[in-house]
Amino acid sequence: MAEEIINRVAISKLKVIDLEDYYPKGNRILFDIKDWLVEGLVLREKEFRAHVAAHDWSQYQDTYVALHCSTDAIVPDWAYMLISIALQPFSKVTIIGSLADLESILYADIISNLDISEFEDFPVIIKGCSHKPVPSNALVLLSQKLKPVAKSIMFGEACSSVPLYKKPKNK
Image (tube, rainbow, N blue to C red; front, side):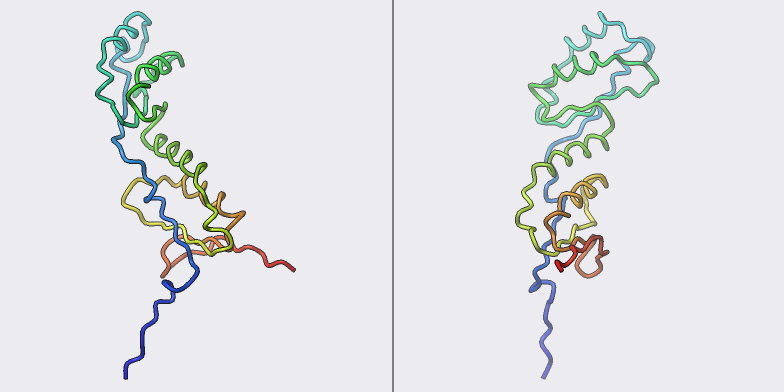
């Protein structure tokens, strides 16, 4: 008679959190302002304002936008602010920086609003592998948020996790 195989992970109190499950849907756009600068380097206010006024911002409906300048131009803060005001009715989020910065900011907001009460006094695995761009910074923020409530924190998969934290036992 064959011995029954028991899935200990399935019956354990272990909780798994996968940040990929929280990935915000929507296109990411890297908006480079260099083409609106004279020779890609000099911002002339009148011409810049004309570009902003003439641009079709509706094409960014429900997108996440990272504003940047790919040249070494010195861009005044008001220029990015002007673009963000034009984008505000359309984009979900607009930031200054790279697409990686955008993902990091999106996840920082998600994690700060995440209800972690279900993880209180449970061993938690923060899932490591993902198909979507989950920034490393999000993993750090999540581990910091979970530490005060989790019994333990591990990283990876249930079959091969790396222990990160174990709550000390009360004496």
